[in-house]
Image (tube, rainbow, N blue to C red; front, top):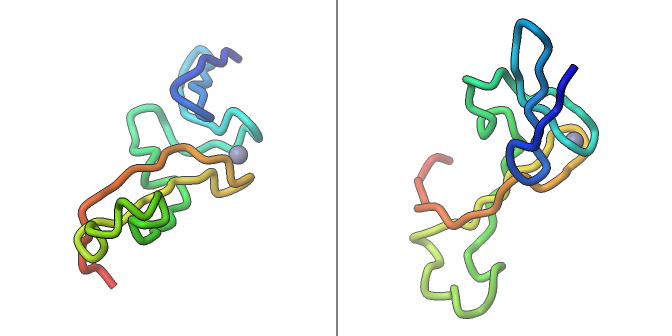
Length: 87
Ligand SMILES: [Zn+2]
C-alpha cells in the first residue's frame, strides 16, 4: 500500500485498484479519492470572533468552520464560510 500526502493531516492511500483518503495521524479512512472528504469529516462551527476580536463584525454573516478527523480529532481544515440558516 502506498501513502502520499494529500493535504495537511490527510493522506492518499492506494493499492493497485483503489485510491482513497485517510487521516495521516490515525489512518482512519475518510472516503474514496473522488468523493468529498469534507462530507466525511466531523464539522464544527464557531462564531467568527473565535478567530480574533477583529472578526466581530462578521458575526451573524459568517461562521468559522473547522473540519476534523471523526476518529482522532486531527484538524483538517479551518476557514470562514458564509452563514447558512440550516438549523
Ligand atoms: Zn485521525
